[in-house]
Length: 407
Ligand code: ARG
Image (cartoon, rainbow, N blue to C red; front, side, top):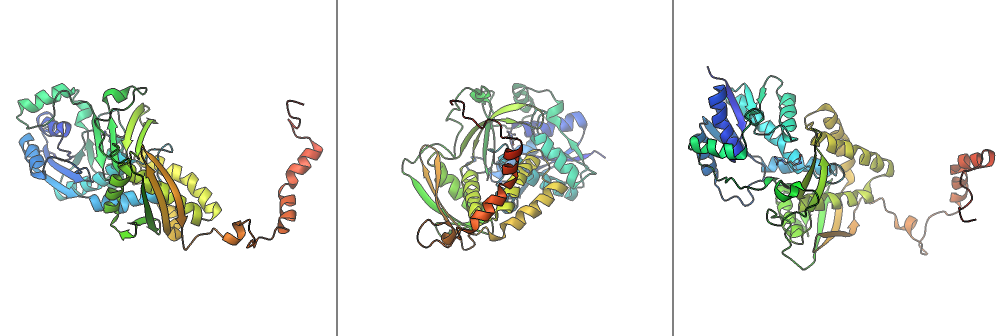
């Protein structure tokens, strides 16, 4: 009996060619799984069109899974808790969707009695790592196949291959950009952007084209770490992300242009569009400034970096990531309140206020006015002892550079 493989199918050229290629070269049966993680924003194709293509390529079946709510409520939510930005910038757009897809691939592999899963990634990127490490974490018995790492086809070869097998593809030989998108944003690569000095073209951008010269001011309300309303209107997280992508993105906010370190040792120039992700994380981190106790806050900042690295590197399903999630979740119990945010073209975001019933900000302690409740005299002994070690050091050994250079 032929080996059965469940393929993560996007409907695009590479995964369509992968169906036929695996059948021809490896003699396997292929089931396609298309996981909707919010990439359908302005797609001109219906699922029926995509399924027809998978079947034309030779798939036994093509299953559509709607994982948008799961993507938002589990994956984006955890990223918000952790203020997750790889290398301090990138909010893990593609890195967050791969474990969602992996979980459904494994689930469908069980349903179809498959012994392997497959993906269409090449050998140069992070996504192969995320698919494979993720699959091994959930299903150590399943094999992972990566046809695009074996076939050695150029884009033009793939188009010829699709033509030869009558696979109805939309791709043309002059496609310029590689775009990956989901609810959390878009990653745009290739074309002119492969020169890190070249300014990114506007043409492939959708979320961050400036289309509103008026400032946009809004209030994001958080409950226990998650955004739950905009301007007092409650929304499910997936909807709130969409609204913010539109409103913040209309002023050009949310475009990131960066050179990042891939897991496989390559530096790559990446352009991201992620207005909602950056707005939510910015507002969330600001609210944490108001409500988190200092030591928790400082330790959390250190662990946030680690969390983002783990997820970027494909360790969504791993014991350290699970333990860090437990820490992050514990810190979110009091992260409740409102943050007011102003967006202004081209691409500026500024936080103009924050408030919380759980605020640790104490006006009496902070004020310089007459309502001051702080006991100034208490500081005298505190500061003396706090600096005692340095004072002793200065008296016995002398501080270096004590004399200004000009004297
Ligand atoms: N460099 C980003 C990441 O590793 C974006 C990857 C985009 N993926 C793609 N298949 N085009 O998360």
